[in-house]
Every structure is written in structure tokens, then in C-alpha cells.
Image (tube, rainbow, N blue to C red; front, side, top):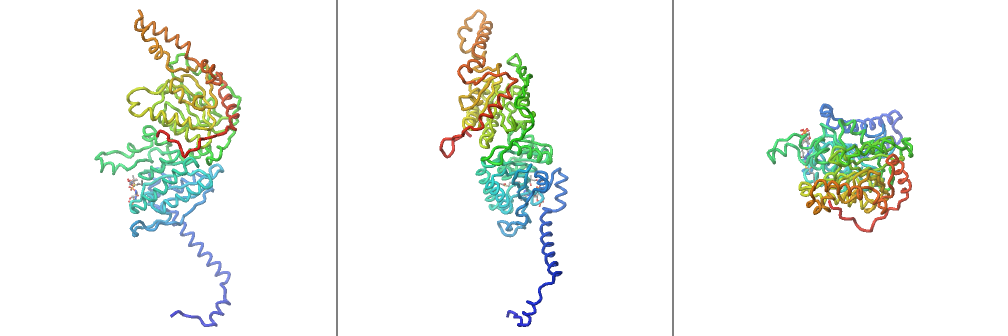
Length: 539
Ligand code: HXC
């Protein structure tokens, strides 16, 4: 039976409120309980595993957030969230469930972030972990701020079974739907497997840390079990492999600290969302600055190479260039810089690598970069020196037609201001693809050294004068004469200028000034797209 107090007891209780001292003590007890709860969660998997993380040369999830964001700006969500105990209802739960989530600022601009804690079950993703990530992704899309994922995870939490797989589905869906709305950046900062690599693959840029980060669908142990092949983490999915061979990683840095610093640098080039423009940053570099050295950059001999980065550094504000995928398909250079203070996306052939030819990897690399710039309102500048598409069975069998078409498609669809400067070679299909007037570029300049034609002089002479050369007394001499004749007639920028395909043949030294003036008048460019659900890019 329920005990009932007498009227006198009740009166006395009413009469005796806690003394101020007791009230303070009670509040202190509550605050202490909260503090203990928070401190327990902050420890993640415990001091031993934190030390192990440090021994491996890795920072903890919280240390990483500290370095990523402006000092003191981090506001955490769901610190006290735990899982339900797994698919089978018996598994352990973990405070925070192995991921730290929230928002903060980078140079004063808001970003959202999640940072996986490898000390808690290898940073594996369970239901609560995924709900925490989904929450910050939803906030990021709603307010229009970038999301930065610091990944250090063994993938789906095996103990949570299909709930873990479903949880990854929730994240993949958000990654795809947020694409083109907010910049999504992934840092790979430990061994990442399964879903922990698919989600980053759906984001815009992937950073990896050398020697401590790996990306693979399944780790070396599973590879050995399934294929009976021994392979190291590094060879299977190390930073070098993904930066040079697979093209999965866009940036690789020697350690966590440098990686997070580089993310901050990238964010500064980007708008917060697709409705905004990137922030203007005045580097005090005069718009009218000329560079007479550029007049002598292109060698006399058309077969001699030179470094296109000399031209790139010369035209950009303060020679500051953030190259994307610098180790992959080096025959094309992509990256961000500023001109007149505004962010531009630069795509340039690199004559010093494979003569700047377009191949499968170069086409893929540039196409994705062009798509990113277009969707985030970043004007595109193209510097052209391309002898053509790479011929031969290897490239054909690898799908050069399909991959080349991606670049063509990406440029055609781009509605941001587009400016091209033909520095030297611009032959055949590659001339058209590299942001020519014919596929919608706004302004096209050429240096006097430009060679714009269907084929290179020798190849062209061999085709159109074949019979004459074959029947000549001295075929070599005839070929040489005809080649020179072709060069004089066709291989220059002036035919194109006469047609209006080139807006002007400019002095190389004036390139920076001419581009910036064009960017200035293109500020008000109206961007229109046909009404449709989406096109069908040749993926
Ligand atoms: C649960 C995991 C885990 C996982 C690691 N751990 N991965 N727990 N689920 N997926 C735990 C380990 O049991 C260990 O716990 C702790 O994390 C550290 O792991 P270690 O193996 O000791 O670390 P290391 O030697 O550095 O190796 C890291 C690793 C390896 C390479 C990530 O753990 C590994 O191969 N994990 C499995 C990776 C994998 O195949 N994932 C795919 C999941 S499927 P203790 O208690 O011992 O400290 C998937 C599909 C998603 O993600 C859906 C796609 C559509």
C-alpha cells in the first residue's frame, strides 16, 4: 500500500524549502554528474588506445577537430548519444558511439564536421554513429555550409549486422543528394574500409595522410582469405597508390597536422554552397601586372617541352596555386587560384609530361574538376597546349572515346564564365574539347605561338600529299617541303582569328591582365540550362 503523509507532515514539508546551501549543493551534484558523464565520453576508447593512436603517428578524433577549426569555435552535438545495443540486443553500447560531430568555423566561415574515433571499436559505423553523421549533414545542407568528414574507420560495425549496412545507406544517400549543393570534403586519417571508403568516394575531394591512412573495399586480411594473396596495407590502398595510380585521392600530406591545414586552405577557395560565390581575397597583386618573361616561354622548336606551371604561377594572384591531384595524370594540371581576388578553376595541358596529350586519366581528372567548378560558381580558365588525344590500342581499349567524351560533356554543360588561352598546340578533337569557342567558351585568346589545326604539320602532309611523296624522286625532301608549307599556311592562330574563333591574338606578357578584364565583364553572365531532370553524362 502507498504510504500517505499526515496533514502535519505535508504542512511541514511545504514549510521547509531547501536551504540556500542545500540548493547550491544539489545544483553542484547535478553539474558534477553532467561533467563526469561528459568527461567519460570524451575519453573515447580509453587512455591506452589513445596512446596507441599517438604511437601510430595519428591524432585523436578530438585533437583533429581542434586543428581543423578556428580556436574555440567547435560546438558539439550528440556527445551523450549511445547506440541501442546492436542488432541482436546484447552488444555493448559506447558513449558517443565512436564519432564526434558538430560545427565550427574556418577563418570565420561556418562548416560542419564529423570525426571518427578509431579508439572506439576501430571507428566502425553503427546505427547511432550514422545518425550523428546524418544529423550534421542535414544541418550543413539546410544552412548551406561545407561538410568535412575526418574518416578513421573499419567500416560497417560487424556486430550491428544489417543495421550497420542500412546506416551506411543513409549516409550514401545524403552524400549523393548534397552533391552540388555544399562542398563535401573527406580526410582519410587511418585504415578505412568498406562503407568508410564509399562515402568519401561520393564527396568532392579526398585528402589522405601518408603512411597512416589506407583506403580499400576490404583490408589485407580479407584479401588474403579470398584470393590467397599477401599484400601490405600500403600496396593495397596507401596514399601513394591512390594519389598516383587509382586517382581516388586528390591531396596527400605527410601527417595529420599538415592535412588539416591543407583542408583549411582548400575551404578558403570555395563558396559555402552553390548559391554563393567564393570569398574574394585581395592578395595585393596588381591586375595590370605584366610578365615579359612569358614572351619567351614557348621554345622555338615545336617538339621541345616547357613547364606550363611557369605560365600558371605568372598569371595567378601572388603565384598561389592549389593543385588538385598533382600526382595523377600529370599531363593535365587542375587546381584553384585567384585572379583579381576571385577564385578561378584552372585546367591546363602540361607539355612537359607526355607532351600534354589527353588520355583516359587526364580526361577523367579534368572532367570532374570542371563539374565541381561549374556547380560551385567558380569561373574556368583553360591554358591549352595539346597535341591531341593519345592514340593506340591501350587507350582505345581503355575507353578513350568514353572518357574523352566526359571532358567534352563537362565543358559543354558548364555555364560559369569560361576563358581559354591557346599557348601553343591545339590540334584536332583536343582543340575542340579544351574549352573552344565552339563548345561554349566565352572568351578565347591565343598567343602568337599557337598552332591551331586538324593535324600536326608532318602528319597532315603525309596524308594530303601521300601520292606526291610516294612518286617523288626524293620522298624525304618532298615531305619536308610540304610539311613546312603546311606549317606556314595552316599552323598559326591567325586563320582562327580571322574566323572569330579566337577573340584576339595577345602578347603573352599581357595574359593575366586580359583574363582578369574578361572575368570582370563576365561577372554578370546569365547562366541558363535547358529544363530537364538531368543529362546523361557518359560515365
Ligand atoms: C567492428 C571493428 C571493425 C568493424 C575494426 N574493428 N573494424 N569492429 N566492425 N568493421 C575493431 C577491431 O575488432 C578492433 O577491436 C579495433 O577495431 C581495432 O582494429 P584492429 O584490427 O586491431 O586494427 P588494425 O590492425 O589497425 O586494422 C584496422 C582494419 C581492420 C584494417 C580496419 O580492423 C579491418 O580489416 N577491419 C575490417 C574491415 C572491413 O572489412 N570492413 C568492411 C565492413 S563492410 P578490439 O576490440 O580488438 O580493439 C562495410 C560495407 C558497408 O563497411 C556497406 C557498403 C554498401
